[in-house]
Amino acid sequence: TATTPTQYYTAIIVGAGFAGIHQLHTLRRHLNISAVLLDSAPDVGGTWYWNNYPGATSDVHSHVYRYSWDKELLQSSPWENWYLTQPEVQRYLASVVDKHDLRRDIQFDTEVTGATWSEETSMWTVKTTTENEVFTCRFLITALGALSRKNYPDIKGMRDVFKGDMYHTASRRTWPSARDFRGKRVGIVGNGSTGSQLLVALAKEAKHVTSFQRTPQWNVPNGNRRVTSQEREEVNKKYDEIWEGVRNSAVAFGFPEATTSTFSVDEEERTRRFQEAWDQGNGFRFMFGVFGDTTTDRRANEAACGFIRGKIEEIVKDPETRRKLVPNEPYARRPICNDGYYETFNRENVALVSLRETPFAEVTERGVKTADGVEHVLDVLVFATGFDAVTGSYLDLDIRGRGGKSLNGHWEEPSRPSSYLGFSCAGFPNLFTISGPHHPFTNAPPQIEAQVEFITGLVEVVGEEGVVEAREEAEERFTDLSNRFVEGSIFHEARGWVFGDNVDGKTHRNSLWFGGLKKYREYLASVKENGYEGYTVTRV
Ligand code: NA7
Image (cartoon, rainbow, N blue to C red; front, top):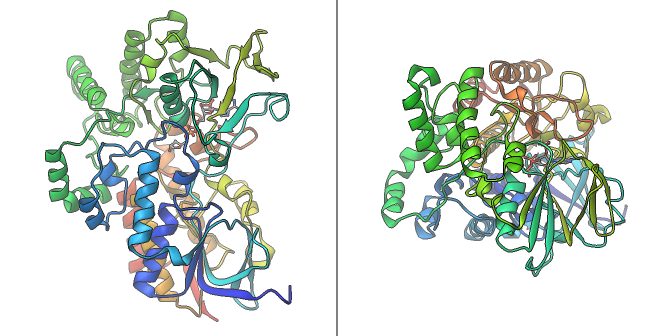
């Protein structure tokens, strides 16, 4: 309105997770431009703010699940275990924000609902849910994360019939503050990274836990344990070297990816290597660190599956439960890992329901009923049903580019989702969607660093009076290249969030760059070296 003063910033960043914080810090430190970071949450963390369900833990080794440039914090506030829990990640991000005095440029409790590009002023107008505020900016940088829009099943009666407590794992506001599950009967829908972590955590505490499983997944241990002082010293000493390795690897997890092919060694040696990886733990290591062809060769993949199948058979005592837990798809989703997952099904207070065999019929006052007529009586029903990933993060955001073109519409067209470099789209000047379509399938912080550093460099070149826009043909070329990496793999044979298969009605399409971080960084570097080719820069 005429009475509402407009707040202008050179850059507005949306989302105070790993990406948004790094983007704010980088713009501030390198360019010293005016910038504000908006987030709907009351504190920092992004996905690590919202996902505070019991058992929430990162599955990347703690010394590479952080910013590579923050060596001083690594040394001064050492991690305890090989994996960080949700509160630890959140505390780490908060400590970075405080250390670099970034909080003064962050506005919390402010949900961005849309943004419109004005061709007249060459500025974005950003709409929020806060009253009496209008924001405008030259550059809009969305750091929403690839996994932020919650996905729910559609079960008859689930919204209004159940008398117990109901939560989505990613919905912090709905979790009870006193999280005491003693004496409670809990149902968990979903068995991905989240559902399996929650199951293991709650089984130790609740009276009874039922895992409602639609598709069994391959799960390996993560090998979490305390970091010894010797190990810590070693990491501190080799930190730069370790990060060089991360940047020059494919999945950026801090281990060298294997190049040996599965059948170049005999069966005994194969089993020995799988066993070694099983004992050491970590899903990405098991998938990419044992043999080089696990995700590209069907027979090699089956060898890995065979080993895990053997473990399920060895560990799980009840034959029916065992049968239901064995996946019937290749080992080709985002790999998951969890200490004690299969062992948990041997507990007397844990049950497994296969939704393939007995789908949900309805939610009742006392629990859920499955198609076989059984009513599973529950005090708590938790949806660990994941996210409408990547493009899904934008569904609640009405972004309008040149000529009123909708970003969500842009990604719905036949060959989509698409982007140039994972963060630019033709028709959307001065917009950068960090971790957007075709960002690399890797450990998140290092791929975020690559994107943020590139974007900051580009903003510097373009300048406060500049407008930069990806060319259509560059977007098409990049998207085609990204899709070609998948064609050479078996990833698309498994049905997970990467291809949108988890969401009812979403079309099966690749949304990530499977070419690895090294190749992605090389691509970014060559674009930069060639004067930011693929972009058009104009002055206001
Ligand atoms: P995921 O990995 O997408 O897992 C979601 C789980 O929920 C999975 O088991 C799904 O079964 C299940 N699901 C989803 N929709 C339904 C419906 N309608 N009915 C029954 N079950 C359903 O999400 P997470 O939160 O575990 O992990 C996401 C990422 O976060 C993870 O990859 C890490 O990067 C961190 P499905 O397999 O689709 O049959």
